[in-house]
Image (tube, rainbow, N blue to C red; front, side, top):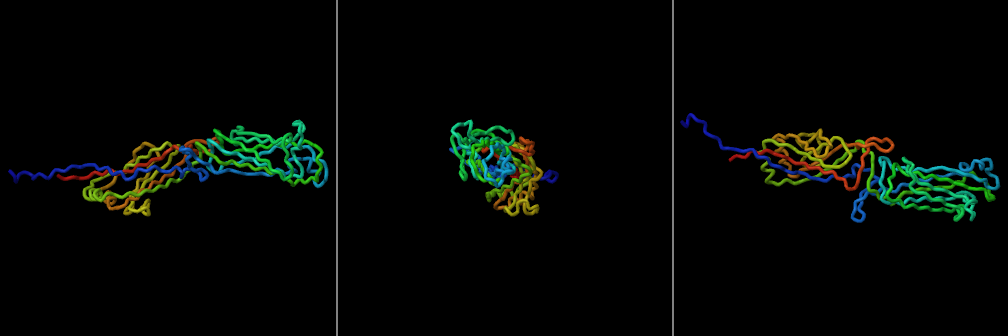
Length: 355
């Protein structure tokens, strides 16, 4: 009877081992322009924007058309009225900022041979310079001020400084300063020089913002981490692995989409090498949050991973924004300091256990 029956083999079970290789919160800085940095104020995370500044010179020949025919003559300065503007645009990629607080400073320096304010205690007879700061896109007034000859002078070579404290404003693409000069005739006699100019400088500084909209068009995210495998676990994986799979989970609340890749190798230099003997890659992934994305692994690949004493893990993504900017810009994404990008990479390995 014994010779007629097959001798039973020792029973075995296939069990699954979960190996959490990496669980990293990735930085947002790769998606933001260099002009934006993350800071903490009073325990609250905020963005800071680099100061933005520009200046322009308004020449007398441009402001006073009657002065062109009088150039070089010593005469009474004619009355004139002039309006112009100066744009201080945001740096490339920065579209909109939600300003928590900022300081806007305007400096008006008189390079003319006379005082364009034509000082007079009667406001009806005095000249003035009206300064209006506006949002470049919407034209909404941010703040305004008047330098009036009824209370001030602007003698040759003198600089007047006007400061605005900006709070809780949204500004898109930059600020526009509108300058309106009214210089009535009051008998000042000078030698007309149409090349002389009044200089106006604008700076936006000490900028704290609670949110920014930026253009993210094919921006590359490249992050690395290293972990050391437990020697016992390495031995188990090497001896009895049957099959397995990588699992990648992204969690984020960003207005971004695009392609994603991951790599696991024995050293950072071997990540994404493309050499099957040096690294194992997960390709053709997407930047979709909450989606567990997998790649099947052979027993040989698991043994290859087990041979890495220290495992290097790399994440790469090429992403773009999903929104439209106020002037029709494409690939715009909105960021706040509280947003997050979390990546979890783990290995599920099926092991053969004999009893």
